[in-house]
Structures are given as C-alpha cells and as structure tokens.
Amino acid sequence: MVALLFILLILLFALSVPIATSLGLATAIVAWQGDVFSLQVIPQQVFNSINSFPLMAIPFFILAGYLMETGGISQKLIDFASTLVGHISGGLAMVAIVTSMFFAAISGSGAATTAAIGAIMIPAMVAKGYEVRYASANQAVSGALGVIIPPSIPLILYGIAAQVSVGDMFMAGVLPGVFVTGTLLISAYIVAKKKGYKGVEKSNVKEVFKAFRGAILSLLMPLIVLGGIYGGVFTPTEAAVIAVVYSFIIGFFVYRRIKVKDLVTIFRDSSVTTAIVMIVIGTAGLFSFFINRLGVPTMISEFFLSITSSVFIFLILANILLLITGMFIEAAAAILILVPILLPISTSLGIDPVHFGIIMVVNLAIGLITPPVGINLFVASQTAKIKISAISRAIIPFVIILFVDVLIISFLPIMSLWLPSILN
Image (cartoon, rainbow, N blue to C red; front, side, top):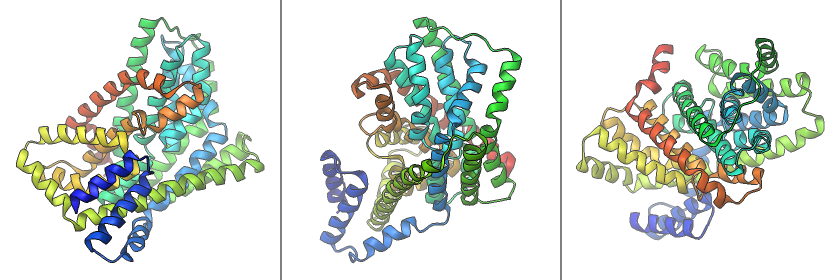
C-alpha cells in the first residue's frame, strides 16, 4: 500500500494535478483499495486538520498582507531602504532586498512580498541599467524572505505540526532571516562591482530621518506583533487580528491609500488565498494521518538510523530531501507531510525541534524560487514580462547562495535558538 500510495502520488503530480487534489485523491484511492479505514473518515480527518485555533492566525495574516500591499506600505519602505543602502554599488538591488526584509516582517508571504515590492523595484532597476533577468531573479529571491522572517505562515504551520510554541518559531526565524538577508546584500554588491551597477546619490541625515519617519508606522507592526506575543499580551492568533486592525488603520486613515471600493477586492483576494492554503492543509493533514496509520514514519526513521547515527550526515540528507521536496510540493503541504516523518528522527539524534523547524522552513523557502513550483519565479516573471525560462537561468547563483546559507544555519543551531532561549 505504501508503494501504491507514492506511485499514485507521483503519477498525479506528473499529470499536473493540483497538489491538494493529488494528496486527497491518492489517499482516498489507496485507503479504499486497502480497506484501511472507512471513507467516512476522510472528510472527518480533513476537517480535523484545519480545526485548530492557532491556524486561525493564517487568514488574518493573509488579510493583513493584502491590506499592507494596497495601503501604500511598499513605497514607504522602499523610500526608507533607499536612503540606507541606495548609494552603495548595486544600491537598487540592495534596496529591493532590504525592503523585502521589512515587508516580509509584515506580510508573512513570499509571493505577496515579491508582488508588492517587485512591481516598483523591477522597473526601477531596469531603468537604471540592470539586466531584466537579474532584476527579476533578485526580487524573486528577496521575496523568499517572506517565509523566513516572522510572522510567517510556514513557521505557524510547523509550530502546529511539531507541537512547539509558534512564538518560539517566530523568534527563531529572526537571526536566520537577517543572516540570509546579509548574504544576499553581499552577493548584490559583488555582482554590481562586476557588472558596473552604480548606486544613487547618497542621502543626508535629514533625508534618512524623513524617510524613517514616513516608514515608522509600517516598521512598528512586527515589533507590536512579536512584542505582544512574548510580552504575554496576546497569542499568535490574536496577534494576527491586531495586525489586520493596525494595517487597516494605517492604510485607510493615515496613508489614505485604501478606499472603500478597494475593500471588496482585498477581502476577495485574501479569501481566495486563504481557501487555497486551507485546502492544501486539509488534504496534507489527511495524507499525514494515512501514512502514520501505515507506519511510514517509523519505517523511514528505522531506515535513516540504520544508515547512520551521525547528526552531520542526517542533516546533509535531510537538507537534500527538503530541497528536492520544495521544488515539487508547496511549503504548507511539505511541512505537514514531512514533519511526522523527519521530526522523530531529528529529536532522537538530539536536534532541537525549533532549530529543525528553521532548517525546514529555510529549505522550503528555496522552493519558492526553484522550478517547477517556484511561485516567486512566476510572480517576478509576470511583473517583468519575461519568460520563466529566462529568470530560471538567472536564479541559479541565488539558489547556490541560499543552499550554503541553510547548511550554515543547520550546523550553527545557536543562530536559531539564541533569541528564544534569551526571551524564555
């Protein structure tokens, strides 16, 4: 049955059947054929997978991201980032990276970060002489920061699946996110020196302060969210509601970019995105339940441990597996499928669950920029109006950089665990 399940799943993927449908259909067919449990269990288990109070944070963070995107937050953050790094060689590429880091701490979504910042930064970079392929690839990889830096939807899902504190996962993602941002900035500088991409005019202190004052309300939101969680003021789910209210107030009353007519589009788009995510979570939860009934996690755990008891080799193998998985399966589904399989092995080898969660999420962030599923590539290519094949070639150096980053994060657990340990 295990062989039939995975063969059927691979076949459905090869036929371009949507991930959620593939997971649900493969599980239903094999469960029915093998008489593992009544088919009535399937809808019950799908519902149980999404019947979780912490999961309520996801639709609210998605809505907050759309409110921020429409509310003019992008331009404020770009103006501030430009005063900080715009004058350096490769300054506009750095502005895209830094702005994406700021926006990631607001939206929690890689695709939303790529779309909101890329719509402004890709044309601006091309106008300044940057190759359109490089500009698009730079924005796609910068958007991947949206799933590493908190608040992040994959971090929430991992916290629920692994039964660890979502607040701890949020704090654990801060330093790795900053580290990845730093490596991207270094790469932008090296490319700029090689290609001759110049920066813009350096801003004086007055201009920096003016831009900071314009962006301060946007920058405060992640501080309010994370500070409130760790201060015991509200839970991550309640923090998501606070983020929605805060985003609406800034966009509607302060910046005045959100109009009443925009609310229909915002609610519609966020509802569709939420529905897609929840369907994936539901069917992935069903799939995880089924493979647990078949004893797949135990079989894989015994197989891994029979090969090696070395933490080093396990982390190398796990990173390769996660990287390949991220290329074909959306992050939410990958987390819910792989956590029951890999987490018991990692904990038996003494790897902290929070640290392993960061390893998993950063690997799956790479999946956002790798074909065939890499959604950031599609968003960036549509924004730049170039073929996906062109941007796919330009993304290769970034994939190498991010994979080296994830290896460093894997073997330096203090990077993930220091902040949670201090705050706890």
